[in-house]
Length: 219
Image (cartoon, rainbow, N blue to C red; front, side, top):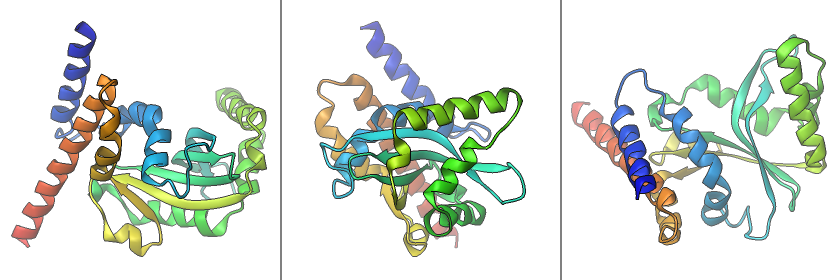
């Protein structure tokens, strides 16, 4: 019973703390999305990710900002469907209004202006120090998992509290938290962690809707 109480306490804290100005909820929820993301994608976008498909997730995948140095931004999750040999970028948001033009620009770069080989070549680039060791570990994982065999780029998919027209206008896909809750809820009977996680996502979605309604009333 203690485990159940701890799970409830964990997510109650998240639901409270997400309203605090400096609290970065995405970093805390990231670990739970890492646990359930494969199931979420297969149930919410089954035309792209079939039940039998083998998916490999890499968090914080580096995307080079320019050609002159090693400065990069990070894709929240790069999802490799090794069955279909396709690659999709996943961006997690817990606040619809945290999406900015700079981020949109880099996701367009991934989708429209860069080859997958360039992504892998950037990871392989020689580096020194602690950073170099981490990039070597990342490339070893890519090589050992045969991810370079994936040759087709898919779309950018946002996971976010509410549907956002801006994302559609940019040609990206989005999965609102309400859809995740709807599609994943049937599987909670034997998974208390999933049940609490979905309850937290539902709470975030409702809070975001309330904020949006308040903005409309003020405008």
